[in-house]
Image (cartoon, rainbow, N blue to C red):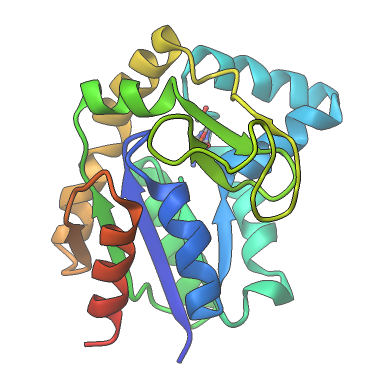
Length: 216
Ligand code: AMP
């Protein structure tokens, strides 16, 4: 059965960490709009430079731009077996657009997993976060360090800290979450799609919870 899933949560809630283990387990495609945007930024194009301005300041990239990007991505063959959306939708208009795109494809959302987290914990997690430049796997320098400093355990890629993982920008991103993204909790609760995931610093706890929920 095709599973189209969403992970919702503030920056640093553990969305990416959950996604990198959950997607191979379910055989579905991980779509992180943050990763897609960082690819455009890395291209150095005028669009990339414009996007970089929003990301660096901790603000959201405008809905129309994200909307175009996500439409193209979801139409790709690689998404046919199911998708896990990480970092999208982040606003009510994005959620409405997603509903329309998936309805046109005849694929309803199966579940929205919500990872809740407080600001203090987010700061502790993100200032110590590094991720692989090659495969995107996230690490935490204290709680989940790589076996060899600076090198990804899985693919041998170089680990790097994100430019927007600085305390001042993290605070801004968290405030943006509260203002723009938190309303999606009610939005999906009203549709009976919201599943609150047990909070824990151990990524395995969230993974087991979600797998158990999906197998029920
Ligand atoms: P993330 O990797 O999900 O933490 O996203 C990093 C940054 O990319 C965010 O702080 C936003 O500036 C931008 N971004 C990612 N996804 C979206 C989205 N769905 N809508 C608007 N901006 C986004």
